[in-house]
Length: 51
Image 1 (tube, rainbow, N blue to C red):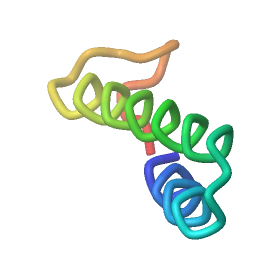
Image 2: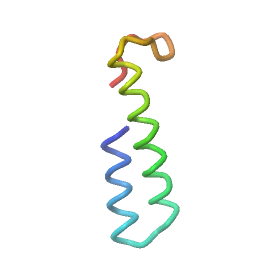
Image 3: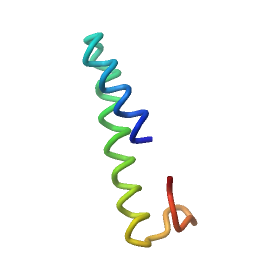
């Protein structure tokens, strides 16, 4: 999710498409939150690890 968000950020920046840029930011933030929760051992939707 983080990688896909970064790809969307780059595409949105290069093509100057604001909606793609916004979706990329949202995906990166959600991916980072899930990664942090998974790394501290907190179960996310029934999973111990999220990747």
